[in-house]
Figure 1 (cartoon, rainbow, N blue to C red):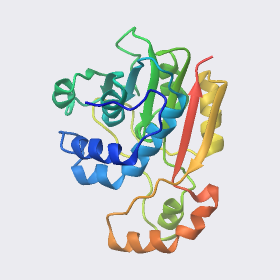
Figure 2: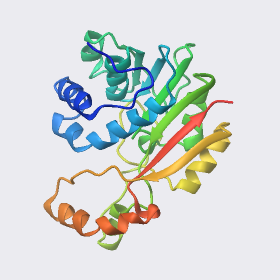
Figure 3: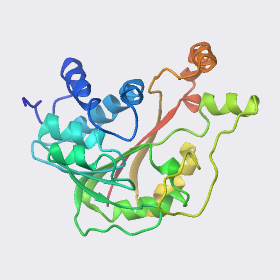
Length: 248
């Protein structure tokens, strides 16, 4: 496969072609899910492209593996995926992506390997432990000076405000870590996530409020999302946090 230049931003045409291939693989979610959240995947990889040098990177992605697979296809990076479930491991192996199981909420890493980059996208909100516990475990798997990119949902996003005002539940039930997956059990504000990152030992990081536009599934939610779009000009009400953190 033709690869982009090592420090090039993503070309949208190239990304569309690769994303079309990606959604045909066997994942935990249906292909429609990945199409809905395409903007997030593109934004994360654009952020990563700005930070790359000309050499091959060793990537670890926690959960799923879509970002690591795309980086492998685009730049030839060595990709590894860790997840609680092995549902997508067979598909990933066919793409020469390494895999291992890891219950990040409960266990230390089952590997001594160190990585240049960790993708941690839409995962921390599923972990029923203080965020700094998981973040410290990830920091320990990064080489000195290397990068973690994460995109959790923003606690103060407009969707949550609407849910509270209309009596809809924001979070799923919270329990002790076990071998099954969890729903959304905890979300973070930018201030709270700053504290968690510092507590985990990161001292060089940025936390930005971003809007990765997607179309909600329910019709009423689609209407509310459209009507509320101007309000997302206020950073505090945007859907996502985008974190870039460096290991000391």
